[in-house]
Picture 1 (cartoon, rainbow over the protein chains, first blue to last red):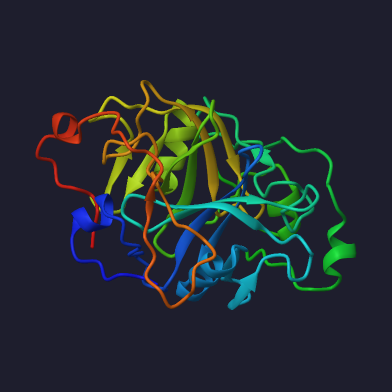
Picture 2 (picture 1 turned 135 degrees about the horizontal axis):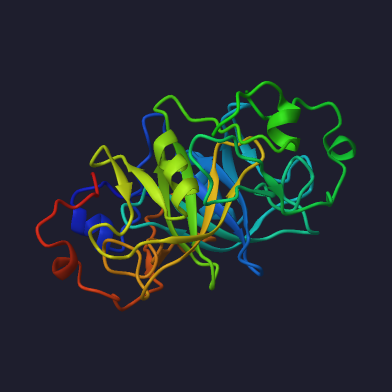
Length: 154
Length: 154
């Protein structure tokens, strides 16, 4: 499914899909809600995840914490249907526009993983307080995931 | 400006800014147009880039190809003014909503770095042809960047 990378012109201006995976075999994927444009999550894909996403039209990622291919929604039911898949200029990042059932995406229970903002215009030597932009969870993570280990790594 | 990471609850549910940089000292940053919601680019920030972005309200990145702190727009004039900065659940990725002057962001000359789409529902063993979603460049890269080296690495 992928072409070899042979020139900058091919990669930037051509129609070959010639993705560049990093040293760990991954590329980052920005996933947005196709309707609202909101960024839901930033995930990672290996070659197999990208291939399966293209072949099936459902988002697949590589889970870096669990080290497995991850068909998003297999546990929670929150499968992401791909409306559009884009790749960037040097083909080392992808952007998925998806539709999700219900109104949740994040394992913590919020709609987006990016539920907190950082105020700008702050002195560089002061601690910063985050602000919650989403104040209500759209589902109860405990009810959905039970005792599955939390993917956040300190 | 940053707090120590002490617990999953602090990182996910608290108001401490406690970012997790990767082994190379970087975290990925999704940058979207604050008006249209379009994903403009995916960049990387080190601690200094994140600190300067928060302090100044203008997007700073770490250029992995040039290995320098990168005040976006210093060369091209396409400075990104931060409307909102968000951080994700486990604080290893940020989302910048920005305003840009004019209508361009990508070094190739397009509005977004993600100017090509990948058709889905394709057999996994066939080569894929990308489709140009932007067909006209919004500026001439040669006129803006001159002979500066192209950042794309094969």
